Length: 397
Ligand SMILES: *Cc1c(COP(=O)(O)O)cnc(C)c1O
Image (cartoon, rainbow, N blue to C red; front, side, top):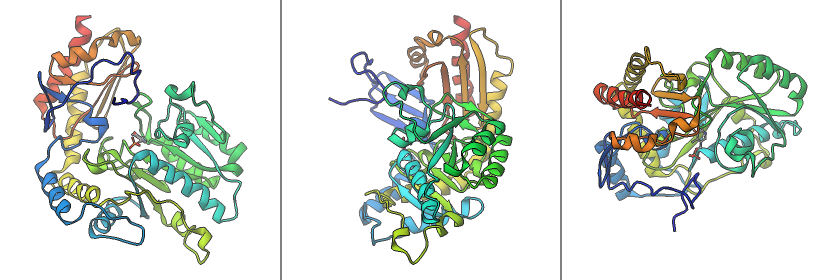
């Protein structure tokens, strides 16, 4: 049988079978549903984009995959040049992987070995934020702070957690900087931890503190990259030493991610000493199909001015919820293409998923949160419809 993610198989409701998908809609045997999850926040163009389908088919007919060990190809070279030109500062060195979790692991390994190569092998601890999510592999779980893992995987050796507060960060650096390699954050929006949002001023202060205490700054932009916060990358506002991109990178077509390092990090490995090389290499890194999709996705993103679409989504969301009040809802968070309604009591979301389906919407609420990570192509009327369904849920109760 299929073992489904994040669920108790014994009590799991029957999953919804998808028989097609087009634009913002998922097609089921019972009808079409507007997808507010963008399949874990990746499908920014909506489903079944004809232009992406076309380049993908062409690349399949040339070659679907070759390893990057000793070989290279045009899609990976072109994507690398494109990413370097898009990213700020000297974030110029792209290391590819097949998933966001692995790309975060790559960033961790880069940080530790950067200091090791420099004779500072004691710098191998990490600082993360409370409620952080960086993936499901062991180290990403340890540096993350997801309640779901605390019971079975409590191991947190060599990891410190702080709230997004400069004083707390400074205190940890002050006491432990000699052993800390890097501070990692999901910048501006902590996604899986509950769409928690904080101000950019914390990132500005964190940048200064990292420089002051010789700690590397890593931005996990797996979820926030490619416009989600209303910025192309949050790295455009505050420049990290390493940025990790995933999810929307390949527009929901093929799992892929990239860890991009600046000159300082890269130069820490670039030497006549073979032991200073970076020893990592996922089988499918730089997969030509994934790179081809990413290139076309970015081309459409720029040509169709997606940043203005995201701004418009944000403006509509703010307008829809400006006068909304419910004694069940304790917070409404809106940033870029992201909406989160937080309820005081999680039992108030019981039945919400089925209610949404009856109203033509696919939603995946979790714990105390209803969220929308909307596809950027959603039209105003469709988005207002989704918002009114959300609001009606609380009105009727
Ligand atoms: C989804 C996510 C990851 C993990 O990416 P996968 O491709 O699922 O391994 C890591 N960091 C953040 C911030 C994410 O949202």
